[in-house]
Each structure stands twice: as C-alpha cells, then as structure tokens.
Image (tube, rainbow, N blue to C red):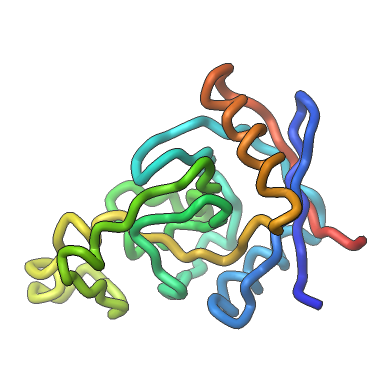
Length: 178
C-alpha cells in the first residue's frame, strides 16, 4: 500500500493524500522525511493556476536541491504539489518549498489544445537557450507528489472552499496510518 499523509484543519475537517512514489520518488522521500513529526502552518487561497490553497513555507534542508519530477503546469482537483526552486528561483526561500493543493476543478490545461509540450529539462538558470525557450506555459510548474484519495475529494473541496471564502486557516499535516 502506498504511503499516505493526513491534512487536518484547525476549524475542523481532514482528508488523506496518497503519495505518488512511482511518479515523484525523490519529492515523496523528502516530504515523508520532513513529516517525521507533524508539521503545522497556515494555508491561504490563491488562483494562480486555478483554485488552490497554498503555503510558501514547507521546510526542507537549506542546501537541498529538489529535482523536477512529475511536473505539471495545470493542476487538477486533488493534486498536491511543491514548486521546485529551479521553477521559482527568483522567489525561492532557502530551506522552504511552496506547497499547494488544487481544488474544485483545478485548472483546465490548454497545452494539449495548443500543441505545446512542456520541457522536463532542469533549469539551473545558466543556460541562455533554456531561458529563451521558457514561455508562459512553463513559468510556474510544480512537482505533483500526492493525490487526495477519491473518498475524501468532497471533503477536500469543502475545506479548501472554506479557506477561499473565509480566509487563512491553520492546518497540520502528518504521516497517516489507518
């Protein structure tokens, strides 16, 4: 059985996320290790690439370089992801990764309609050709490392919607064992 994590909200409610170790093994490893102890923070609601709740402060070792894995531009409802510093370099905070959960439909991916293929090459910021080829479809990609389990999708949409309408809310995320 896949590893799972639990998001619990300070105003009540929770949901379970299954880690996608086959698609993002390194990201899952870092997340799992970071959750040796439960971690608490606050979510805000954003609409950068569809409806999502996010926190910019998921802690990782300060010198850690997260590889690009299972990159997405347009998250679907239930996707749980972190933005690798290579994708967010000018806004990165050493020792932290932005973490988000897409809800209520996520983002409608237009890339398949436009025939655009997203590159999975690492961006180290030193390759002029890479920078030149980066376009609006590749400016904020994220590593999807988890997916809300089907049974909890309705709860997740309600909880994330509550943050959208009522503002910032605290949460705790921890390893989950049934």
